[in-house]
Image 1 (cartoon, rainbow, N blue to C red):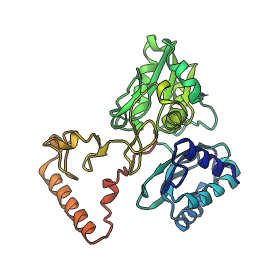
Image 2 (tube, helix red, strand yellow; image 1 turned 45 degrees about the horizontal axis):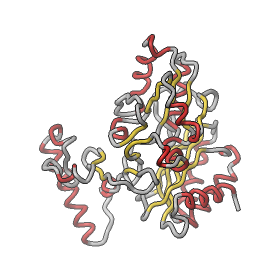
Image 3 (tube, rainbow, N blue to C red; image 1 turned 90 degrees about the vertical axis):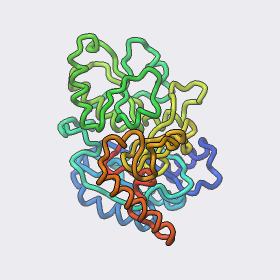
Length: 335
C-alpha cells in the first residue's frame, strides 16, 4: 500500500472515524520549483474529475497548495498520483472527515504564488524558518522570550487561536508584510524568537521566510499548522482555545477535527455561533451583525433575491451556484 494512503488510514483511525467516513478532506501543500506547472493543470483537473474529487488546488512556479474532498476509495487514487510525482515527495498533507461533499466543483488554478503575499521574491523553497513538530510546540510557545504570531486573518482568529498569540488583525495575507515590517522596526521585538502558525502550515512557512528577510534570526513555524497540532496533541495538553476556521463547507472544526458549531454569514462570510444567528440583525444569506451597518439597500436586495433563488432550487431538488457561499466556500481565501 502506498505510504500516503497508509497516512490517510492512520489519520482516520486516530480521529476515530476509520470505519466508514463518507468523505475524506485532504489539505496539502509544498513549496517546490515547478517550471512546468502549466502543463500539470489539465492532468490534475482530469484526474480529480474522473474520481469525483472536488475542491481547489493552486499551481504556481513555487509549488502546489489546496484542499480537496472526495470518497475515501477515490481519494486513494489521487494520493497514488501524488506519490508518483517525485517532486512532491514530503509534501504537507493533513486529513479529516466530512459527512458530505465539502465542495461544489473542482478547480485547478494557475497563480503567481500558491499563497498570495504579494512578495513573489520570497522563496520558501530556497530558505525558510525552522519547522517545529506539534509535540514540541507547547515548550516553544511557553517560553516568555518567544513572540507567538498568528499569521491568519481576522475572520479566522475571531473563533480560535493559541493562548497568548499576537493577532495582526489582517483582512488578507497581502496585508501581513506591512504588519511584519512594523514589527521589525520595533527595537523591543528585534531580539525575540518568533513562533508562527496558521491553519495548515503554508502561510506561516512563507511568513517565516519573510521575517528572516526582515532580519529576525530565530524564526520557527508549526509544521502542519493548527490542523496537525489538533490531530496529534491531546486536548488536555493543548494550548489551543476555540475552534479552527477551515476553507470548506464545515466552516470550522473542533479539537477533534470534527465539524464545529460555527456557521457562516453568506453575505460577509464571517463565522457565526448559533447564538449570533439568533440576533435581530441576522437574516439567512442577507446580513448579520458584522455587516448589516455597512451593507446598502441594493446589496441587501440582491442577497435576498439570491437567497430566494437558492430556496427555489432546493425545492426543485437542484443545486444553485449561490450555494457555494451557503456551504462555506470562500473564493479568494486560501491557507
